[in-house]
Length: 101
Image (cartoon, rainbow, N blue to C red; front, top):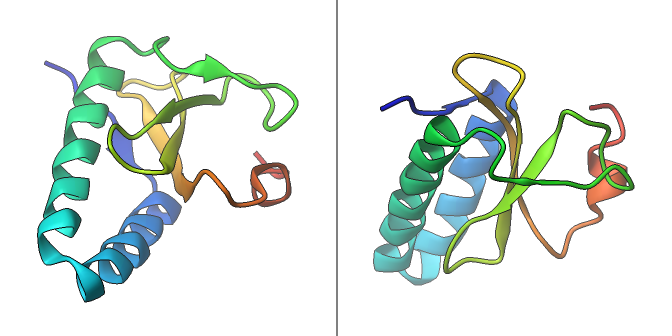
């Protein structure tokens, strides 16, 4: 089993998200971490699973929603193991945030 890894920016995103969720619901924060772990395994096992969205970020960046949460993982399968570049709330201005990818 190959697992996708987090970039430093994605690690910062996760800390911010988990801290925010945990302030209201520690159980949900743990659930987010577990959902992210499952997503990292799925990406590692099937790197092409995510959607290409060239209007948001240039390929090879792919997008995969985090099950049960309004967040999306942005990753590149062009690495071994795949690299999760960012973990962002889906309601944010993704094209603006990701314009440098």
